[in-house]
Image (cartoon, rainbow, N blue to C red; front, side):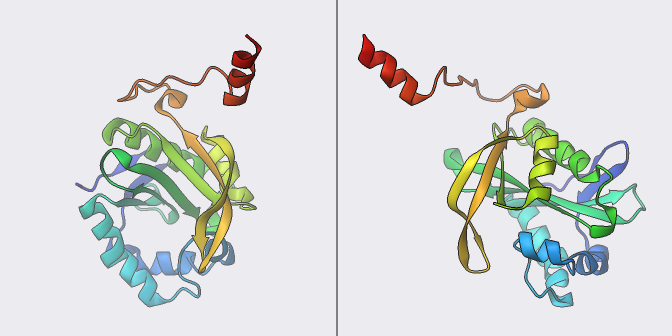
Length: 205
């Protein structure tokens, strides 16, 4: 996939490059990022080097993961990372968004702004019909961003994510193109009522 750059009123989102290595390393020293994301812990300079020079470019090239470095303006500091990850292949593929914000730039709405920009890009350019969000139960910061961006939390998935070699329960939610007023590549027919209600109605006839 061809790397692309996005922009909002305050932010520039572009693929990671080698010049981001030091800022990625510094951001990943934050205890919350290491606790709630899948970055290595402890996080070393070699991890940052591998991410910006190998992992991120490979993800873009193969179309399996598209991470964006989020900067405050074209020449501003790194404030966040947002990426779309593809699970599965072909008609069974699903798309999941993941993100983290640098500690010193939280609380300004940058994360929600960046997530919305990437979501719109995924819907309009990638043809994604459903964008999923998952976070370990208890990750209140991630959930707050997801809800502000319009994701609907759908429930708890048991053993839904792997973290540090263990399966963890996670919240799962989704954003649809229609939630942002965008067309979808697929028609969507929502359920009229829960299955249990339908069964009860059927049995009463």
